[in-house]
Length: 101
Image (cartoon, rainbow, N blue to C red; front, top):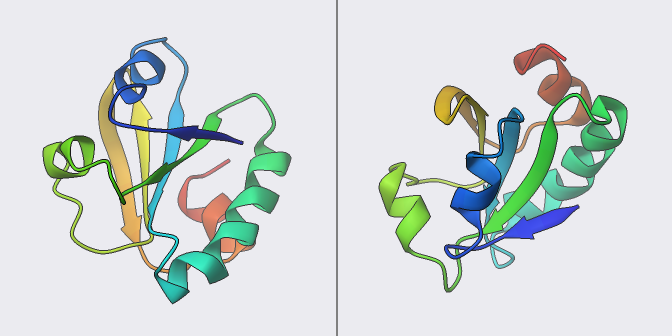
């Protein structure tokens, strides 16, 4: 799974493919619980939506742009616009249901 940074985020956001981002911090317990669930969901989603992670540590610009206040935060971007966002340690089934994939 691709890990994005402040420098690489816009390249993936503007490539025309739907983008599901898990904003996280490796130091947050709920993020560590949600990460394997997100990886499982990403495998099931396949290439319909690009699933990526974004580590907040050392990357303040993009989280500030989207008002990230709690993690894990999942945001689905369609045509460069955030259309669905959910904060919390979702399991694989919840991720698939919330993002309707």
